[in-house]
Amino acid sequence: MNWIKLAEFVNVVLPQIAVAHKPVLEALFVTYNTVGGFEDGIVPGTPEGLTVKVHAGGAFPSLGGAILLAHAHSVGDHKLADATIDSMRADAAGYQREVCAEVQKDLPLATGGENVLVVAYAGLSAFESAIDCVREYREKLPKCEVAVLACDCDHREKERQLAALVADKVVTYPILTSNCGGRSDMGAIARTLMAAW
Image 1 (cartoon, rainbow, N blue to C red):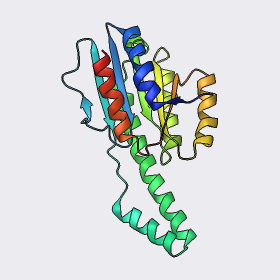
Image 2 (cartoon, one colour):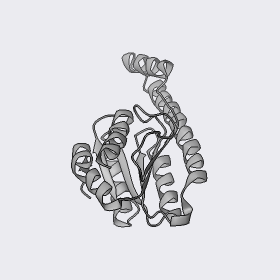
Image 3 (tube, helix red, strand yellow):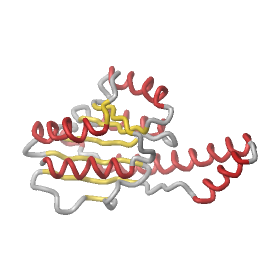
Image 4 (cartoon, rainbow, N blue to C red):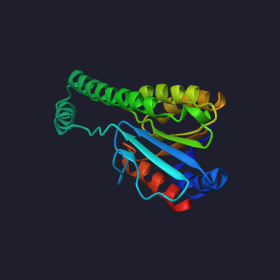
């Protein structure tokens, strides 16, 4: 599998998607975090024929968790560091499951996903949960296109799992970014899509 770099997706692939789907496209942005510059819900002011919906869990790393993790590393307490990381991942996975359930209620099932683009963030903290959601969306919307934005943390494992999903045509666009959290990159994708429309 070849990753698509974020810049290539935004500058080359996304405008092609916009042209291919005119006059109608529904874009669903799904993340356990936030989509930079956008509120949860239908984005107002989009060009005619384009609907952009943001489904965001609003997860932010807790300051307490970050401080505890930094302390654990500074004193060499690997058990505390591992426990803190596990707790942070469990929180993110919980946010992801909540967002996934919300999106399930809002899927445009009538079209089978025709003229639907799902853009999902699958970061280190909730990668498995995000991928489970992507599988469910594809199952319910067999005609949709799915872009998965992943940070490059543990990218070899993410690549291994995404390669199978790309081969099975579950994921259309595997996108790699160096920005953890995906917040600003998800926002950039949404803004570029609206500008390209």
